[in-house]
Length: 423
Ligand code: MN
Image (cartoon, rainbow, N blue to C red; front, side, top):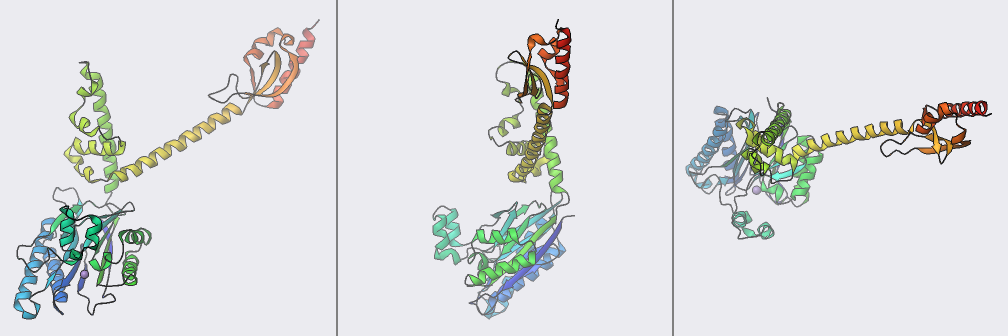
């Protein structure tokens, strides 16, 4: 079971008389509605939408059920508006996140529904991504290439909504799914937050304040400090436990990569038709090959290998990259430790050998080891010619000893033997 922890905060702001936003934190359903239309209309619209959404979703807590619940909420708002002349012009945005069983039986996913100009963001691995498109005139124009991003941000039409619940009986939400991973943080907020607080500021709070209730409260506070021109609503949903999904995905990635390596080996050895060896490789590998990012390549190859691994396509490359970085870091530490041991071995001993015809004590190993060259520790006045014949070979090769004391003792012996043998 995926475990979530959620909190919300909503505030009238500094300029408005009433709070026409409504927030919902239910067991598996989280939502923000931003109502509009006359003195009472906005409040009624957002509340009607949220209550209808909640009840309808409880009856059918699925991906499809969420979409239907939004349609039902739309009908409820319309019904309410037509029954009361004072509420005729009312409407509301509606953004919802629900934990549902995925359609393909791959476990639980977050279903996301969106109508209007509230937003849903995902903070994953410290990076904030906006999941929704604002249904406003200026944003539609920007998406159509008629306005630049900078122009759209200040365009007056950014407050004119193109889609809300209320005016049209056939209104349906934008739907998408998010595969939840432990550490993910989903933010649902009304425009009263993002019009006052820039995204990087929002991201900083989400990254640094771990308690969702505290983070939500801080975001509302920031919006108020920046002016509080509108009602401010924030719902935060943290993925506390992804039911081993990340671990399973990485295990699968490994097997997929191993499988690919085997296929590549087979292709190289088995084909034997000569020419470009890539011709023997499986098709998916060719399509995966052009990117130089190894992690991305393996993720993509894995996704293409079997349907079983299809969910990996949704796995962001940086998650894999973090794993690769940890692996490489571990490898580097291992190599450093090994080199240290070799260095200690290479430099931790002495030998008695010859330097320019003189018997000499060296620190290190005879001939050196890797790039650890032996160094002269002590010279003696004993010449190569004076070394007794029985020891000449050993000294020429380098006689290894474990300490400087032992080297000196060995030389003392050489000297004595030399004097004995000298007539
Ligand atoms: Mn608003």
